[in-house]
Image 1 (cartoon, chains in turn brown, green):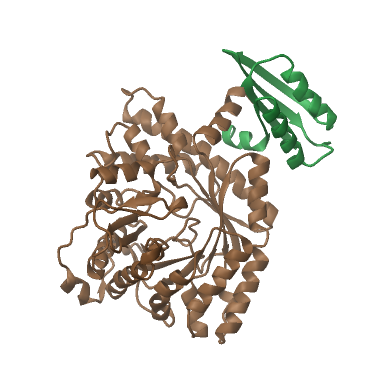
Image 2: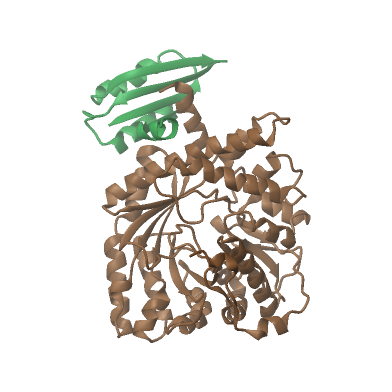
Length: 451
Length: 89
């Protein structure tokens, strides 16, 4: 091994914020369903605490031994709506159970307070969705997601309408806590069932009983590599450099995932190839786009640069790991990315531009703070548009939007920690209530008919 | 298990000797050493065999970190596999 290679790795970790963003243990709770909700919750708690008892320790041990920070240790579980279907009762009891588990085990987040309603509501789904604002207000570590559309099923417009109201209520109920509940809720189209990243992680019903999924990070490493590239280098060279860098980052994720799986005695699921930013300086996806030659993220050319970045990350990463999954691409969460925060504060990065970007990135409108007076209908409209982009392009899209109660454009909502802080950005308030109130389903597009 | 000990800091007499000495104390065999000095900055990577290490890896790493702090050096002990994973196919 050459010294320069060793020093390159150390520099990536020390100066360029390379880390393993999360080791997420996916746990199936299907065998915990019981007609009595108290009994069901007891089984849930026992199973999670049994399987994940060493998760945090193993994450910390690996971090220490290999010298790579493992930032988050998390758990994802079977969508709780499935358990509510069997047990009935107040779904919030499950949220409180999950919160107890998270506190006992010391994990950062536990995801799966979820319902999958892309085609319609089954027993338990409505009750769960209705309870989301209360569940997220009464807990700190529980994350919730609802899948309201897919390429195969179309878009459930009744659910779209409902989720606009739920997002709004979440923000209202936690108005004195920076509207935090809305930051822990994601509305999906084409939700992946093995995503290790929060707030959208849940453990799909097609998954094994227990698996380890890993999410890598490394926007800082990609940016540092690009910074060394000649400003006259062609986009081919830019793509090639990103591919090579993504390969190295992903190899690290693969190794850590394998090691965690071995030490925990749990099968290894997937590596999520995502470039996930944090508010830390130098750990920004926006800065990568700017390094490609944009004065500020949001300028014309941003969507093209992001498309190249997203594709090159996948091409580089896919060969470095045995199983790719989750969201795998570039994330663009505004409040969690120093460059995006700056660009949005300047007014260069607008909601319309972000919507365009979501057509080519791995997620959707993520961690976007809007005017506190934004109505539930407007939020439903945003959700419907995002879902349509995902449905037609056969990709995951999501909405995690936070109406900042009591705040106006130009003010800032500060979540703290990994969620960062977001400037309130302008949102088009033109009415759409007849559309939103129609309900029903948007039929699946022709792309769905592949058989 | 193989590990990489990396040392970076202001150059002075005896750094390599001191690091090697700690390795010997703990029954660690040094397999490969590479060292450079650029503009007075000392940089060394040492690949070692920790098979017969007589304390835990965690204590061994802590010992080097403490030693580094006392001597104004940044010293890390990392499992060799991480470098292999990243740089070889």
